[in-house]
Each structure stands twice: as C-alpha cells, then as structure tokens.
Amino acid sequence: MLHRQPPFSGFVTPVYTLGNLGPAAEALRAGGLVVFPTETVYGIGASALLDHAVARIFQAKGRPQDNPLILHIHSTALLADAVSSVPRSAELLFEAFSPGPLTIVLPKARRVSPLVTAGLPTVGIRIPSHPVAREFLEMCKVPVAAPSANISGEPSPTSLEMALSGLDAKVDCAVDGGFCQHGIESTIVRCSDDEVVLLRPGAITLEMIASCLEEELPGVRVRVPAAEGGGDVAPARPEAPGMSYRHYQPRAEVWVTERVDGARTRKRFHGRRFGVIAMNRPPVGVGPATPVYVMNSAEEYAHLLYRKLVWFDDQGCEVIIAELPPPHGVGLAVRDRLQRAAGGQEL
Ligand code: TXA
Ligand code: MG
Image 1 (tube, rainbow, N blue to C red):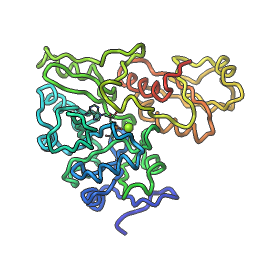
Image 2 (tube, protein in one colour):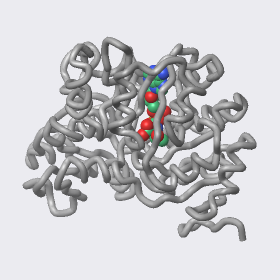
Image 3 (tube, protein in one colour):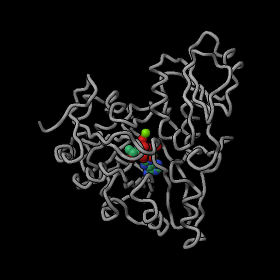
C-alpha cells in the first residue's frame, strides 16, 4: 500500500503521512489538487505554475474567481520567483515570523499567473511552519497556490476530517498532519517602503509586527485599513478581496455578544435549539439541555473555534451564541472571525 485510508469511514481520497509524502508531491507537480496541513488551517493546494490546476481550486471550493490565492513556499530562497521586489519591512517580518502564520502581500513577479492573483498586481506569500507542510513544500519544489480547504463560505478546516467532509473526491489526494496548532488563518499584511497594512488579523498581532519594525524602520507606518464604522478590527474589505465574502459560517446562525444573558437569550430564541460558546466560565441560566463549550483563553478559542462551530451543527443547534474574547492579542483575530461568521449579528 502506498497510502493509507483515513481512520474515519466514508472518504475515498487517498491520504499520505510524514515519511511518505512523495506521491502527494508528485500528484501536485502533475497538476493535481492536494489537501495539506499547516499550523493555521488545512489548505487545498495546486502548482502555481499550472493554470489548469489553479483553476480546479476555484471549482472544487466554489470560490469566486475574483478572490486571489496566496502562494506557499518552503523558504525565502524561492521568493525571487514569485515577487518583483521585497521592501526592507518585509525582509524583517520574514526574518522574525517565518516560517510561521504570516502572509505578506508584495508586488508580484511577471511569471505569477493572473489566475492566482485574480488580476491584482500583488501576490500573498506564506512560509508555513508545520513540519509536515515544510516537508511537503520542499518536495513539491514549486510555489503552491492554496486557499483554506473549505467549501467557500464555510468554516476553515482544522483537521483532515473537516477538510475531507467538504472536499472528498474533489481532490486527488490529501496529507494528514493532525489538528492545526493555531486554528485560524494566517495574519495578512501588505508591505511597502512606507507602510505595513494589516489586511487580516491572526496569531501574529499588530503589536508584534510594530515592535519588530520600530527599531530599524521607525518611519514605516504600521496600520489597519481605514475603519468602516464600528468593530474593534477595521474590516479589510477594500484591501483583501476575500474578506468581503460570506465567511466562516456553519449551518446554524451565529450571534456574538460580550456576555451571555441566560434569561434574555432563552426568551429571544424561544422554541429554537441554541448552543453557547462561553469565555472563561459557564453561562448562567441558559437551561440544562443547552450545549455549552467554555473557552479558557483566546489561544484555545482560536485553536478550537471552527471545530466547535461544526460541533454545534452536529448537536442539532439552529443558533450559536458566541461570547467574544477580550480585544487584545489573538483575541482580536477571534473576534474578527466570529463577527464575520455572525454576519454582524450582535446580541
Ligand atoms: O493560514 C492561511 O493563510 C491559510 C493556509 C492554508 O495557509 N490560507 C488561507 O487562504 O487562509 P484563503 O485563500 O482562505 O485566504 C487568503 C486571503 C483571502 O481573503 C484573499 O482575498 C486574500 O488572502 N488575498 C490573497 N491575495 C491577496 C492580495 N494579493 N492582496 C490582498 N489580499 C489577498
Ligand atoms: Mg479561506
């Protein structure tokens, strides 16, 4: 046997593991689609050098054509193939945070297909740190175009089982790397000589980025995009095309709140099965039959968020009420994902 089947029933996609990634890398180089793990979420990858393979990603996910893909590479040695210039700010950020959960948007090299960048003059570059991703990318030897391995609009997968529950039989094979450490997608910044703009918050926070640059590049401005009314993280709508779409949504409708008020919640959702994600301590007065999950830190929240959204679906919940973590550190990124999952619905 060259591959093993997943330890869960019903999937037909061949699955490879560390020590036997050769066939998965070969499949990708030959134009195939491969689901693979990273430290943030699972990705669905194709060779960025093959337009027909890149096009299949959009089909498999049902992804709008105008939403660009990011490129995954093994090391900065491959940067010159993908981008036309690297400002000093980006050099410093790659040195400090790569490999790791950071994507840097830079002017693209001519050879990067407009299919990858959806016609934009820039391309997002990420060097993942997951050991399985690193081994896989090294064997692929080409830049790997990869979005998160979910059907467009749904929560991103943080396990192989989650990824295959949407993409089984739509990909040529998959690589298993266990549960993803961070659990939410990478931080995205756009770098130029004058400024660094946060397009998507993640585990690498704005404060970490600012403090990395302040000594050597005090003149470079580190900012979030201009606010579009409210929210603790300015929406990245005009800057990162994909952020404007429906995102991260389970079947259940999601509502966010700073603190669950049990009595009010029961009245508001009377007759509908609801579940609660609470922060730090169980909610009071939501009723004994209500599914509840308590997050003990923002890091745990990020790690488990997408898995738990799907878990509440599996519990038959029509509504999920999620308490927001405090707005600092990775909590800002969790708030961003929850607010998008809720489509702005706040209690
Ligand atoms: O952690 C991650 O970044 C995961 C793993 C698999 O690496 N990937 C991921 O890809 O989240 P995706 O496609 O689901 O999200 C990438 C986001 C999209 O919102 C897209 O619009 C934006 O990055 N993006 C891609 N290229 C861009 C560019 N040139 N300028 C601005 N935004 C860009
Ligand atoms: Mg995505």
